[in-house]
Length: 542
Image 1 (tube, rainbow, N blue to C red):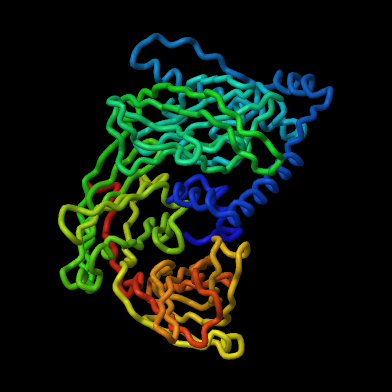
Image 2: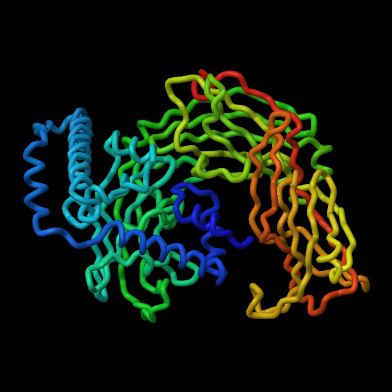
């Protein structure tokens, strides 16, 4: 995986829904450059938070708050009998608590934002899953339906306390707020690492038979707690799930302050009743099929509407002619491009054009029983329920066998750049050097080929080789960020610009060769010279 740019790292740390999080997190954990960038951004965020939310309260704070609260009307709610209507009473009570908390929040803002986050009793309400950085329609809907659960987990060992006050679950995902307090009573935001392969720490979701359905991962977004999420590729069917944490090591040392590794036992377990969440799940069977001129068939299957998200399922199938262009398992490397529009033509969500988040919470691709058949699903935070909208198919990309190449003299690239032009791609080769460790990503000397340019097809990062004049071949991988252009031609023509940090890394190359040939073995071919609208709203078909 390529290294993240500053913008990509900021997006990774702040977005609440990002696909392939585990892969990105694993790369960051293994890459010293990305780790330094992440730590620097987190340090900036922590400094900003300290400056905005100081811990010192004025002596008159309590009197001012209590005086202001006397003017707030707070209705009482009579206890509801234990019947089917009791759940609704609880929802109503929670709504009143939320609006009361909102009233307190507005008063505190008037008194001073710095003092606002320093009151423990208020912080337990405001610093919740619904706080300032976590605007999430799915979570708000979960609160509306009374699905926010309070497991009240508190585990102490070796002076450290692990605390879990809130969790939300439906067939789409589990969201949990976890805090870790050190011996000094302060929240240790970066000390806990859920890296099962490295330190054995993990938090999993299990069904009633004990089968692991998914793992919770820290998606960042706030300094107030570990914002843990597990997404499910398939909607879970259980009426009861269990959250099980196996935490035995506290080893995070983000600022290199010499914190020792702490070994202990912070294991926990608690159940979540999914009965009400399952009742709120609605499945609608869809109809709609499109056959592209390039050999791809798209079939809409079903829409599953859950409290925290909406899941679209569809199948794709490649024709025998298309499969010939993608031998072996290449055909499985495919991505769809589509979007939703409301009746006025305004875009609601888009997929496959420069990254899916924040539109897509989770997605999955599973090969079918026959070669060329793929089952896909995409989970969105929301789609309209009470108004029509359209599914618009923009195109797709699929890995195909290539062999395009260009030859050049590395030493002359600065004075005479060379261009790799094929299939609509235009890559400029502009410089070459040899790098020694520690300036490389490994302990190996490598050649570095600097490039920029524009792509029509999707970036192919690993499927390149270079060959010197003696016939020796080296693997080459492209790193750097890509920017999807905002201009649109012929309905769906998006260009991809390679950022200025793009380069090919060629491990094992010790000296600058007299001549090299750059070869692209596989192209992620993009077919978007056609599009089609699926008339009607998938969410409203019967």
